[in-house]
Image 1: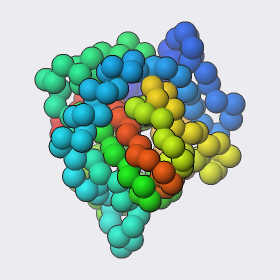
Image 2: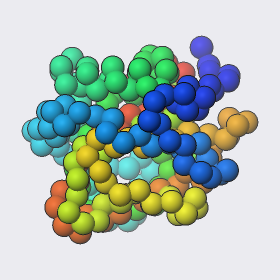
Image 3: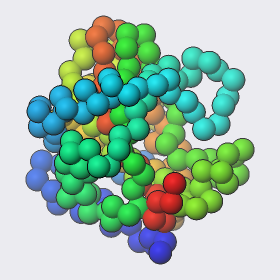
Image 4: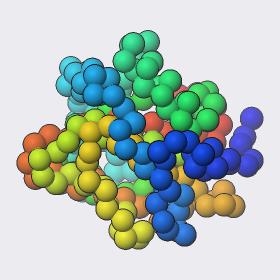
Length: 211
């Protein structure tokens, strides 16, 4: 089934503590202290145990475009199951539409240059990544720890920058009201200047996830 009407924004706005970021250009929300300290520590340990160099879908020739490390998190792990349950309760999106949970680790000097989470329609790898489940709809990203310096997430076209803060969630709709992709969701995982940054990311699709 394809979602034809996205009510996620209204659902999020009704949740205690959720703040909509004031901008007419995108549906963007934040929620502080979303993930408990103990759960964050468990997820960080999982990321450290199974991380690998991050990649990008459409290789643009810039070897330094994304320099972080990535970890795919198995759904049957207790900490992952608890994280998934928190996200489902918060967003109200059927879990069937969700990609597997992913973790990222940014050491000093590492970043993810300005990018969007959706796959560009007509792009070289669009069919490869979107044929079965459609494009990405919502992004949910959680900072798992405080960072000594740097590591902010900057939405240049929205003139908004968010500093890492342990347990804080950011989420946004990658689409416009008519279902087209929203270029204003371009964001930059800025360089970590001191310390290490750990992040959890969850993406949802237009159709149930089929891998």
